[in-house]
Length: 180
Image (tube, rainbow, N blue to C red; front, side, top):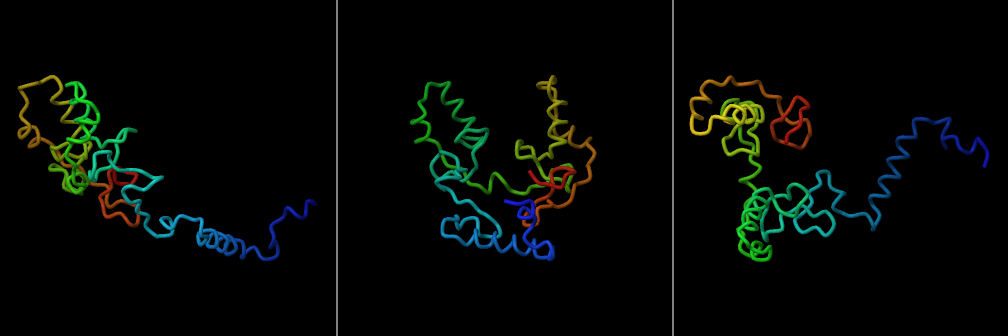
């Protein structure tokens, strides 16, 4: 092998490099061994995929796994409580109610900042900023907190616009321009 054989194939036609790479990529994607799931413009991995499993282990639950486990965040909390009560995992999985996806990932605005999405971690419909503020405010006050009064005193913050991912309809969750 000579030093010249390591040079690009089309040294006199550098404009072909991108086109040639695209043709090779297209041929590889068209191969029968390539998973058809990844040929689409928007990739949607279905529930029950044998390799890319993302769904909760509770039968028919439409929510995604959480925290490196095989349960969604709600079922993970419920399992913790059930385990402490002496329930076996098999009993828990057969008795747990599946949860609908739309209740989990709606694009709901913060009740204080209408241009910011509410955090998925709170039922209070607060953006991450106000969620953390509320947690800090109510931390050592126990029974002396009034959410409505606290919310009325809060200042709305400007949103970060739409998510930068072209196919995503959600509001951005941070200055990076990405949704949660």
